[in-house]
Image (cartoon, rainbow, N blue to C red; front, side):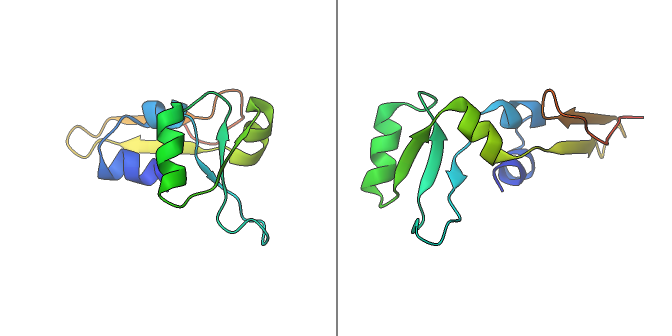
Length: 99
């Protein structure tokens, strides 16, 4: 969802959106909407604001977050120029190419 809103809704470059630290929803039934974030990736004031808004946020190590966040491959076509390009999660074998 973060990618769709960033790329399509806010017209942010796909590589920039993919490089931003994730805010991950915990789907465990006992979690009651808990969010995971990488340690040190977000300003403490931002995390405090999330908590104030009623979100439970737990910081995880970079390794734990990378295990949880998954991967993505995005293929983009500029509607005006027809230019094609692709963006992938670094270090992951993807199946897209800008041909």
